[in-house]
Image 1 (cartoon, one colour):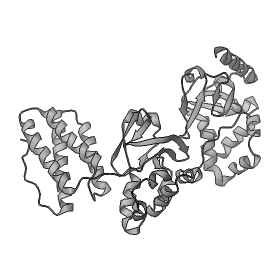
Image 2 (tube, rainbow, N blue to C red):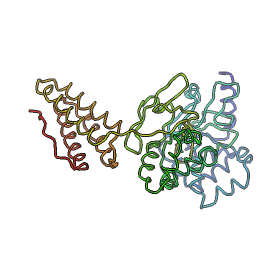
Image 3 (cartoon, helix red, strand yellow):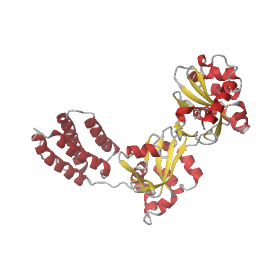
Image 4 (cartoon, rainbow, N blue to C red):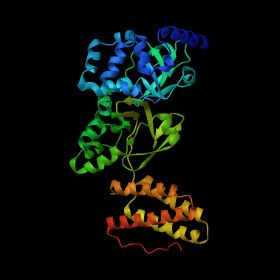
Length: 398
């Protein structure tokens, strides 16, 4: 393997021998001087990326040669160079760029790298033929003043389609797409995002009790359908390794899902991930084999839970054990946040998350207990108003 890289590096030195003092030139200046990246430079100009790659920020560029561009369908290249396709061209080009200066030897143990595009780029430097995506390295480690160039023999093609378009092309998400349409969420999931979608297959929807899907698609059940779909969506690109590290992921519903690894693979709230890390232009899809149905606590259950929490925690606080008091309050809020509240609006669920976040940022245990207590009182008041129930009478911290 070292011999392969040594050979590639030597080729790289010869490849750029006509470029005097490449280290003093920017990435674009080095590519222009090399003379074999005419198409790449033209594309960078069309996408308004020249200034970025001529700037002070450090980048690693996998640079396709003119011969690499010649392998593309000419019609595709001409289409991408049209002004109306500037965004798609930018997505394609930034799929060739990684933030920071990454030498070939530093990427040896990597399986993938996150590009400026946002999508992940597969890397395999341990095989007989070192590759990035479907492309082979021609030369590596061409040093520039603001980064490094690795020359490749094919243009890397990201997925330029949105989440709904990608799901439609896969062909096993007809029910999900119908539900997204009925809920009016198509424009959201086609937007900039990025989003991570745990996407139930058609078989997953078919496994629901008879009549469930038909009922959810009725206009009068639109609110419930929206909540269910939001429970399958997370903000940002969350790949499988990120999800496993996090254990929990906050959905657009304001409720968390649990992610764990079992002998049969990754599971999300018990649903098995059948396919993972399907990149889209505005996010990533993980296919799951069952529909995630958020269970909720009734408002009366929430108020009873809050009351019991206060009655348990106040004597603990007054005895001086502020840490245990914090634990009781935090566990209560986490339980309600995980279960959800029947009929609660998104603002209420966001309020719970904000209370917990504020508490985590408060280091003094006594003050943290008060942050949580005031939050619990506010939540109780809000839920009791929703339920037209008189405010509680409970103990208070001294």
